[in-house]
Amino acid sequence: MPLQVPTNIITGFLGVGKTTTILNLLKNKPANEHWAVLVNEFGEVGIDGAMLADGGAMIKEVPGGCMCCTAGVPMSVGINALLRQKPDRLIIEPTGLGHPKQVIKTLTSEQYLNYVDLRATITLVDPRNLSDTKYLSNNNFNDQLAAADVVIGNKVDQCSSEDIDTFNDWVSVQEPALIYHQLVKQGNLPIELLDIERREALTSTIQNEREQQLHDHSDMEPVFELPPEQAYIRRENKGQGYFSCGWIVGAEHLFDFDQLFSMLSDLTAERVKAVVNTTKGCYAFNVSNQVVTVNEISLQGYESRIEVIDSQLLPWAELETILLMLCGIKV
Image 1 (cartoon, rainbow, N blue to C red):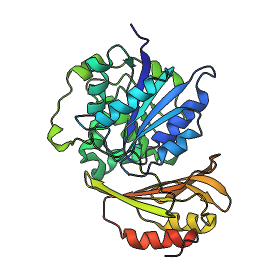
Image 2 (image 1 turned 45 degrees about the horizontal axis):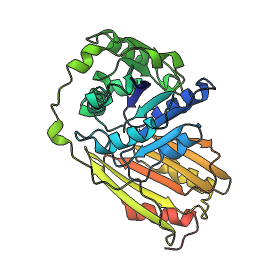
Image 3 (image 1 turned 90 degrees about the vertical axis):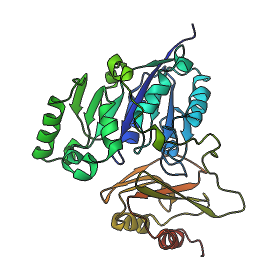
Image 4 (image 1 turned 180 degrees about the vertical axis):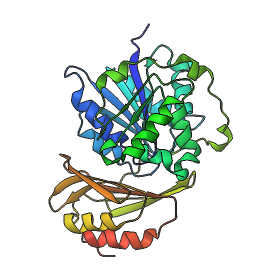
């Protein structure tokens, strides 16, 4: 029998800190191990792959929120490509707007029986969201929590005591009971959690109650690349009540760091992710609830990529004009 690769799904809604968590796990992995990460994004331009590339893992991206579709062709192609590299562990990060049950169904199918050792599904949640009706009424948010073997309450340093009590109360009433739960900050969870075995009963009761909402992206293009003759491109996506717009800008165009930071701080979109070449170097920007987090990364010669997601259709053309101005591209 071929070697089964230990595999974990790390899921959670938009802005909960999945990518930061995976980066922390990569920093703390055994030095002699080679890990692979399959990452899916709702947006079209591929931000997480660039962020995770600094972690030293093998990365494969699936664009446009399609990983969790019933057919799962793009996901299977990505998994197969990574398994051929014989990693010591595979981590799968579905989009924050994805259906984790479909990912579990694929990984536990006969297709991967001899190749994947699926262990605990870890769902990250911001405890503050457990009191917000916008999240509690969202099917995907509830799907992600229902699929979890382990629930991690992230961003505890930003939570009130009431938020923490809500998280603890929610955990205590789950049926079936969770295998493990913990409150952490900045995605710092123990690496040992990856080896917790999943609940077999959860997989056996998976229902496809919303399969009709899913769609086949078997002919979808790969993550968009910038044609050599263009200074930038823009791509949009929509679905599940959300809209996204992404830009790829040539590496030769540098964004003014201070003006970009100020603009992102003022932007009211629910989620912004970016890897940008700036006047101060290459930086990863994460924006959630108008809080901007910035980390310097070591990518060289990589195009700037910016993705904005919101539940309302935003004036993308106006935002584009501002972005191009910040990097000196004449409109």
